[in-house]
Image (cartoon, rainbow, N blue to C red; front, side):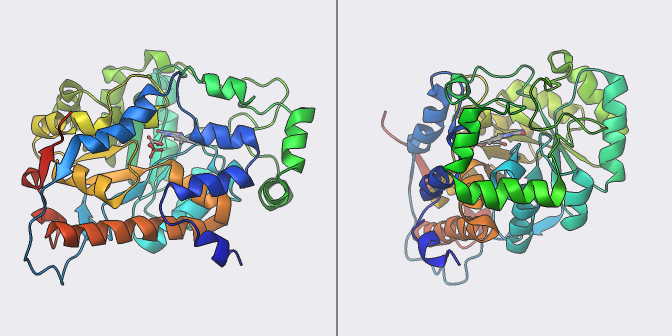
Length: 387
Ligand SMILES: Cc1cc2nc3c(=O)[nH]c(=O)nc-3n(C[C@H](O)[C@H](O)[C@H](O)COP(=O)(O)O)c2cc1C
């Protein structure tokens, strides 16, 4: 249906333009934006330039594979879909759509705690998805949520630890984006001028599913996405501490991962208290502006935690970027915005196309590097770029 236009997206960055045309501006700005002056957003990309490749030649790479093993599960590639809130506002049933695209491609996908489809439905739809929670620093509210996640059959729980307060996103104020979305003439105009989103995503959602709510931010259903007054409940996130992480570790038998780690000391604390893995992340530059680009702190974190799996996200767009992180010791690289842009622009076919584009880049670059498996890639394939 949209095959010809979609194939104009030749790399992950190209989906940005396609989604910009499809989405009302406030929604596009919510995905694309970052905190304050976009310092971390920019650094996430320039960090990729801080390492250059030292390829090896004349090695038979005809049998190469990017097969990845993590937590006892085999994946087709070392990439996954990062958790993104409000996905179902960007594409019809966006969370189910991304989960399906990930499962079909045999890569992991993390369902956001700020999603609009009940986690029970998504996990029924696609068993094996990982779930990300934002939790308050209150045992009485943590415990029922953990029990809900366990009862749903989720096996891998990610705690995002870099959102103790909401970020300063001036871009959202300028774009007039807020949650809940407040109905206004301007919002209505934005919808009318983006009819494919209005009909294909918003009207279809209301017709099929009714008013979307924040379904997964606590043990019970949260606020509706459109409301004149309702305040979104950020809960007592400021009070969340290692003590609560310990409590969760005791109550949760599944795999527990911390997302938003940038300090080797924090990674060490996590390991010592029985956390199963960390995702090194600055939230795509959307939280603390000026926070280090994850690639620059990755080696110190890998060195600090021994065998505990270290994963990473923020700013990865090319197969070469992914391979740099793998060479520095990352076990999985998560990617955010481009997959949601692809889903917003072209639905499940778009998400599948985005996954296959970056897989093709990883495959080609493995050949050009002279490696046949990801295990064969280490720091000897990298040299620090001249500043
Ligand atoms: C639209 C959007 C929504 C996000 N929502 C969440 C979320 O609910 N929970 C979370 O842990 N991270 C969230 N993130 C951060 C991503 O999981 C990830 O850390 C980041 O997008 C990676 O950077 P990249 O977009 O440059 O690939 C969100 C990011 C975007 C772009």
